[in-house]
Image 1 (cartoon, rainbow, N blue to C red):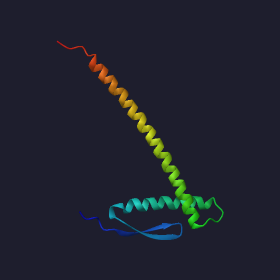
Image 2: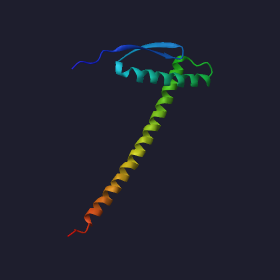
Image 3: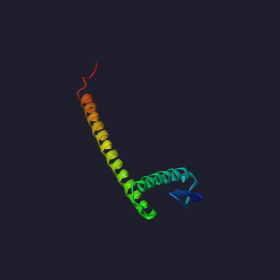
Image 4: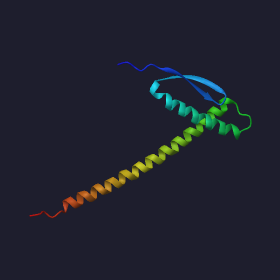
Length: 104
């Protein structure tokens, strides 16, 4: 089993360029993620007093991780409500079939 060849992709974050190797099918997602991170870093830079690139990167990483964890918790909560609702429906169906009057 062979792995797809990696290709270098140029990503720009603020005023720096980074070359990162990735599989061709991951290129668009990587560019989208870099664009998101670049916007986040620019937003943080606009609200900070002369932060270094490294500080912006750390602040952006923390911000993105915080957003991700909040969304994951929200998703898990919705998933649990859906699972609970399906269990209730299943019990109602089971009860309906159990109490069904046989037809002649």
